[in-house]
Image (cartoon, rainbow, N blue to C red; front, top):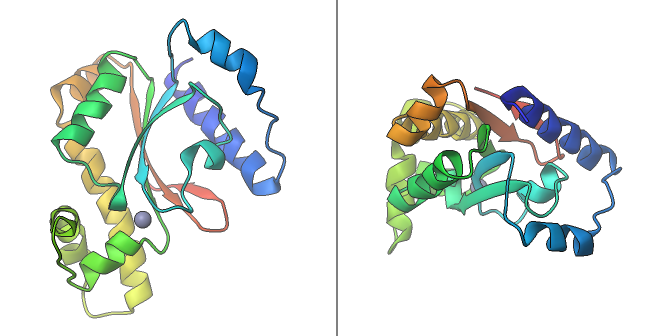
Length: 189
Ligand SMILES: [Zn+2]
């Protein structure tokens, strides 16, 4: 599967998710198939929010997407390493960074929340908040910050030598997506 086919597959799956025509998943035979190894066609960095389930949102099954899920869809070294594993060793042709509407982590960072290890997440979100927070409408600025954060995470991942190599060789496409809580996904970068 090439990069565009991979993206189309996610987009088609999202249409089924939105319209309530998701494919029936027969997990038994697929589990057997996957005993031989995994060949996911996309790596997805998404938020831990319980409303954001990439496998449902894109109507994919077992073994289809390699997911890295954190509050605020931010990545630290372990997150980047997980992406590097998927891109460099599993050779997924597509890397998606997905933020979303009404993200609690983005809102907490916007409001200056700081507590225990949550502070590490807030620090990762801080540059996007700084750019978006201009004293305007809070909801608008939160939306803007979520998208800016997706772009910042994409930039960070593109600095990985493994991701960069795959990009330079034309083996990888990196896409930024915003998930709307009505089920629709929007390509934002
Ligand atoms: Zn979130």
